[in-house]
Image (tube, rainbow, N blue to C red; front, side, top):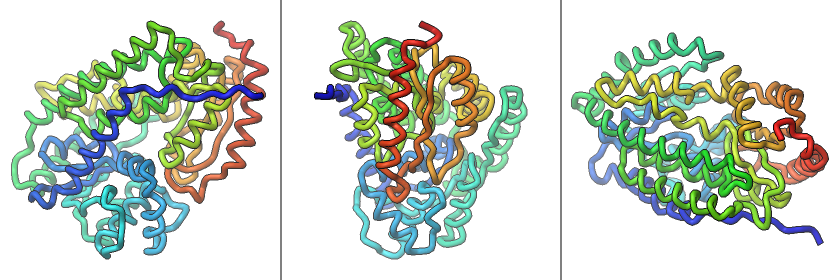
Length: 421
């Protein structure tokens, strides 16, 4: 009889659900209290928080909606009202929700988004421009666009930082002052960054436990633990969560408790978005081989260098530095990404690479190049899995099973040949 494996879930992550529900309820009921609401794609949502606007992060809402199994209905509304199926599922979720609210379609109350007073388009990919333009064209929503230009290499950072800071000061802040009818609150932004710095610092200390063999937690645990960084940015409640998480990881590590029971057989690198609509499915599939996804480029996306954050005297300048020089806008791109993966593999004792290719999102660059170079350098295998972050019509269980079976057969044959052992 084949050995059965399962995940020994962290108790601390069970605290996430109530925290997330509280955030979305506050946003959902904001208009009832006469508060301003913003939608945001990309990272400028901190500016809305600084102005005490209730705001959501595009990817964060999409993960929430898909994870709560409400995404399919909202995607159907989007397609019924003219959105193309092969466009970004995150884009379609928002367009479907806007259509549902405006037309009075029946949607689950817990995933409803109020129509915003301002759409902040932090444009990392072309789809975010289309998303903002469509919201303005179809619903008359006020939009401000900020270009978050993708770096190719580290030497691009100084120029890009200067350009982004200019956009924040000359475009975004004046627009927010006009919408909110008051001066921009630089002191509040400094307060938010002070909390963020401490939160991200403790979170990074938690990442160190991925290096332990066996690992006391999984990349899935990390993924759900992103919520305090995003939803609770600037809220002191985010700090106790990571303190509890770190304490539990320390205890597990001390007692040599593995996140995969009865044992961790393989340690794999997961590259790309987490498939929020199918996280449980992928988790069970990968775990069934005794494999633990313990790292990837995704953990380094949200403020990987909090040491660069200096909340005073200039919160705008330091935030820009955290985005580029801090690696947040570079690790999933070209040269910076390749360099990061090359460091992660030996440091985290990676046996194999899983590259998740989202069919409706191609923002993760150089996956095939990275796979080829890492196999040559370290002799470890890689596999590409094609699906989507939220749309089940782009998910094929048979394809996933076939590729994972072949991948783990190769990984089993090669795992004794890791070059850093």
